[in-house]
Image 1 (spheres, rainbow, N blue to C red):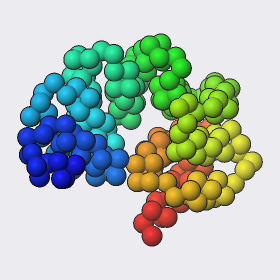
Image 2 (cartoon, rainbow, N blue to C red; image 1 turned 135 degrees about the horizontal axis):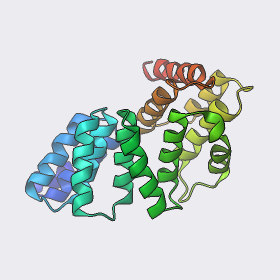
Image 3 (spheres, helix red, strand yellow; image 1 turned 90 degrees about the vertical axis):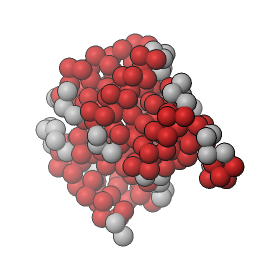
Length: 221
């Protein structure tokens, strides 16, 4: 992307793609800056607007995330992933009613989409109790990830131990997750979900917090 921008600094798509790369690497401020430049050059890049919303969401700026994702959905209502991301931002901000509205719509629109189903199930778990959605977790975790996604498969394996198999050790499960050398985006997402789970009851909170702390310690080495 840098070469393309050196050749043409007005290449909106190149700015947007570099912003996406920054987002994947966890460089959220740089991602927002590049995606903003792309949108200034070409306001029709709806996916870049939604991606900027995701960058805000990953950085914990939930209000800004909701604003960008709402505008993107107004421009293109078919962006189911943006609807699920907005629901996630609402949930992480504690706006559970708005989160449920978005996530139920996302699941209804794309019932086979793992991400939408996962985000709704996270909402059910955060609102609790876990027993009410344990069977749904079992079905989701047992389902093949399609298209294949090693990162999602690894994290679902970790959640299986945390949520469904309390007899198994958190430290061992976390070590197995980290052994695969997850990238920065994967670590960031895992920490965000674990932070949410650490606030619930049902015995999950302590296990999620222990897992989160182990990941933070490893990431800081």
